[in-house]
Image (cartoon, rainbow, N blue to C red; front, side):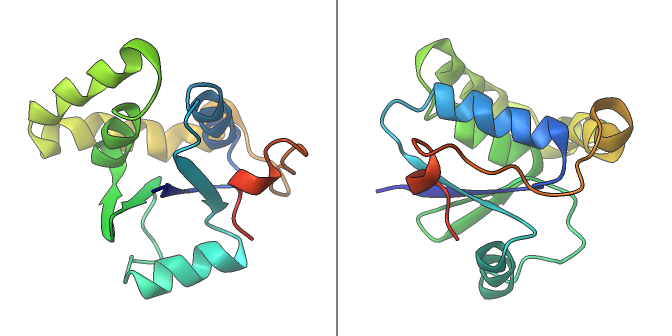
Length: 130
């Protein structure tokens, strides 16, 4: 079983987050698709995800998670101590998402933006949906 992470392919912070996940996902649990890709757009449509949602999306077992919940659910599958991130799921969503939204709103200003999505390496290509 694998799960899908939808991310903003032109956001430097988001791309670095994907690299972070790839390095800590030894079981290759996650598949990835950019929000800008055809498959990303199709997954957004099929899962009735709002087009203007400014968030990383995590789809697991036909359930859609967004914002801080997506990030923490992803952490629970990573190698090492990152699994402990799931303890923050007990923090109420409005509090978690308040901080998530600050980063999300400022990610281009703080981390930059690319003109195009990053091309995965040959080793990573099978992890990215097209």
